[in-house]
Amino acid sequence: MAHNFDVVIIGGGILGTSISYFLSFLNKSKKIAVIEQAQNVAFHTSGRNTGKVHAPYLYNPQKKKLFANAAFHGFEMWQEYSKLHDLPFKKDGVIEVALDKKGIKVLEKYLKWGKENGLEDVEIELLDKSEIKKIEPEIKCEAALNVHRDGSVDYSTYTESVMKDSKENDTTFLLDTKVTGIKKENGKWGITLNEEQEIFAEFLINAAGGEAIDIAHNVGVAEKLTDVHFRGEYWKAPSEYNNLTSTSIYSVPEFPDYPFLDPHWIIRVDGSCEIGPNAVPVFSPYGYDKAENIKEFVPKMLEMLGSGARKAIFDKQFQELAMNEIQSSMSKSVMVERVRRFLPKIDVDKITQKGTAGIRSSIIDENGKFAPDVILIDEESSFHILNYNSPGATGALPFSAHIVNHLNKSGLFSSESMDEQCGPWKFSEIIEKIEKK
Ligand SMILES: Cc1cc2nc3c(=O)[nH]c(=O)nc-3n(C[C@H](O)[C@H](O)[C@H](O)COP(=O)(O)OP(=O)(O)OC[C@H]3O[C@@H](n4cnc5c(N)ncnc54)[C@H](O)[C@@H]3O)c2cc1C
Image (cartoon, rainbow, N blue to C red; front, top):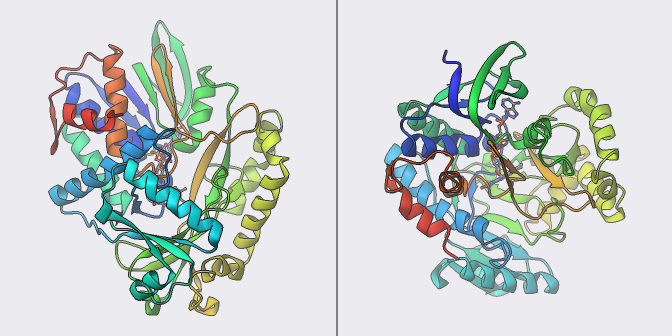
């Protein structure tokens, strides 16, 4: 194995893998490696999510333009990519329901945001109670946003395919390989793998998802920030419910400033249905089970108590919301009841099988506030992506192109040609779309 690389990307989630894809097209002479501790790419959050290619109606165009643009163009890019590689992509839409009058006001705002973020009149419509009843007779709500430009995919297979493409451009993927140490030596990064072997890199990209903040701290970056992890759990519905609705159903989130969205009724790309996710506080980005949470409990608590997270976890509203989530983790019926509010036909006794949980890591600042957006940090010879949360998988391709463009612009890699064809897309055309104000 080579020991010297121009660029090392830590994290083989959908983000790190997509960044490697564009870098490998644009910087053909550079040696690029992606380091992933799991046995495959997208093993963690990128392969354990709801699988929706989301339309950007939840994002304020004034405050989250880049993220909204990434989601908007992510839809068409994944759709094109799916055709090229013969991967399942279902344009099956989503319905967002309001359960009370206050919720209708929120839907009106989402309709406006959706259109400002690029959705056309035919792609998003606000329906009243009787109109939605005609389309989805089982739904109980006051009003609903019917969003046609939304899709379902399996992001694991998509990430694996992007890895294959990147490998064809000579990117090295080191799987089953954990970065256990990073230090700067003679202007280069010395990166220890699995506590033994060392490789060297001119430039480091931190796309380590739930460990991104730890990697950043390791190299002296973002020291005032910390993170809190939330496990999103799912329950599978029996096949007799596969036609209960024709579309996935989300409800208006009551507390959008916190990472607690109410569980949805989900139709997966294979047609199966699930309920979820909730957002249960856990102590590790890999806290899927008790053993891992017990192991990480003391160090994570100490870290949180010594940082801004202390303010967040002692906040009364946070505690109340967190308790709700914990209850819905301990009791299946509490969880199912949250979806029965708008889909009363579901019989809790028929829901017997758990789905695959995924973990979201939210960044908290020194004042105890949850970061509202992705955080991008430039360091002399490293770049860090923190708080890359929903709908991160949807926007991963255009967002990665944006990052590569940013790094190229700052002269780090002096790209060979910005007009390079990257698979089905010309790089400069993606950039023109995503960076449009
Ligand atoms: C419950 C849930 C549902 C969601 N639903 C959707 C959805 O429907 N649609 C959507 O668009 N988005 C969704 N998201 C968000 C989306 O899944 C994430 O934004 C996206 O997957 C983040 O990708 P990533 O590559 O940054 O992180 P990850 O997938 O977490 O990848 C980071 C990788 O870095 C690796 N790593 C970390 N530290 C090291 C180390 N030291 N050495 C080696 N490797 C390391 C990890 O093993 C991991 O594989 C959801 C998220 C959650 C939690």
